[in-house]
Amino acid sequence: MRLNHSQGLRPRRATGIAVSVKKCRACELVFADPQPIPDSLDAHYGAPEDYWTAGQFDDGADYFAAEIATAKRLLDFRPGMRALDVGAGLGKAMRRLSAAGFDTYGLEPSAAFRQAALAHGEVTEDKLALAAVQDVAYPSEHFDFVTFGAVLEHLQSPSQALESAVEWLKPGGVIQAEVPSSRWLISRLVNAYYRLSGTLLVTNLSPMHVPFHLFEFSPRSFELHGRSAGYQIAEQRFMVCSIPHAPGFLHPPLRWWMGRSGTGMQLEVYLRKSEADDN
Image (cartoon, rainbow, N blue to C red; front, side, top):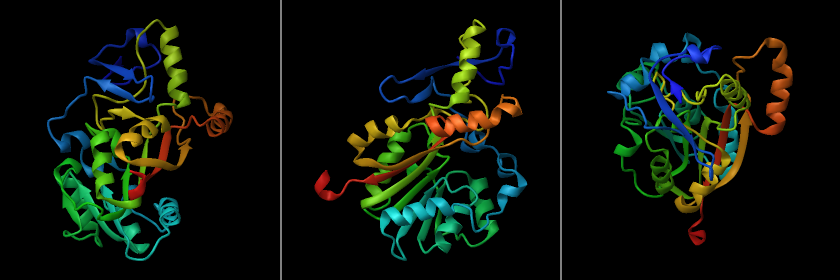
């Protein structure tokens, strides 16, 4: 079970609204069941000024640079290749993709976020649609590169979103996704502490408060889904990221072990659409 607020160091005293959290034994997908459904998309994400810190409104030359470099290498890049940023947010990745030579489009379901992206400049209304991924119908084989940056974990149906992206990709095209990892070491340690405390609580997900996280993924999640959706994992990597709930002196050994064992907080995958003769 997962409460709708911090469960703290004394979980037996914690009270609140709880939801079941489950894990698929085959693909290691972690998910809330039932899934909380917000009243609106704006309620799901919150306002741009609340969701991002002030410094995150600015994007420098290094922002999204590693992802672009990997995409270019996997695509054998040519200027003018078409890219789509799903969940474009403030338009930061769109601006960097355009600067790198992509013909860049975006989807953003939140009117507040879309307006913030347009107000920042460079991103134009004709390139950034106000829509959710399930509400648009791009032509088949239209894009070379589709990116889901911190998006799939928020969607009611990430599988449907990936299947749409595969349909929109040209054969050999690439999807980039960064998602929470269901193998994160800190979650495992905290969950063990909760079990020793005699509770059914887990720390996975944040199912009933902004920003709603509905899923955590492993490489196996994408490997199995790709068999039916028409893609394979081209590259993957785990990112350690921050280390909450641990004293500072433990951070160096924890970071070392998470890097070595593939148990960091975030998982990044590059998924290549099958070539026509592979389907």
